[in-house]
Image (cartoon, rainbow, N blue to C red; front, side, top):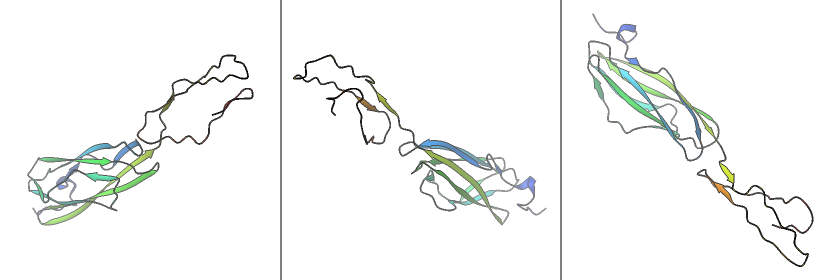
Amino acid sequence: RSSDLTDVALRPQLSDTALDMGSVNVPCSATARTFTIQNVACLTLTIENIVWAPADSQYWLDPLSFPITLSMDSLRSFLVHFKPGSATASSAALRVTMTLDGKQVDTLIPVTGLGVSTLHDTLLTPTLRFDTILSCQAQELEGTLVNLSCDSIVALSAQLGGGKGYSI
């Protein structure tokens, strides 16, 4: 019997029909997910190529050499990486080109991810308490802001509440 990739019994089995990379902090975090292709046919399956459609620099695969051949019941795992460049949803697709018994098929695997911006900051001294001092004296206190993210924090403004004579 001639093989036909439209025959469900002969199609390579994909561990995922879509990959959700989840939410990833921008700009410094990345994540990775694995998908697997298994050859369930009696013939050798050849993975001719895997490319991004459309190309997107936020997603990448570990380096691969093509063609990749899979004998019956063998499988191959691939690691997909996602590092968002901005705090927004993004999507692309992996186009997997495979050949079985001379018949070629392209399979698309949608890949989605969400870049999120989270400010991780901590004010170590949230309340600064000044002692009572004479008007001819000055007192200085220091508040410390700790940045636990990988991005810079820019203070756009600072305010002091209370009476007169406070300055930053």
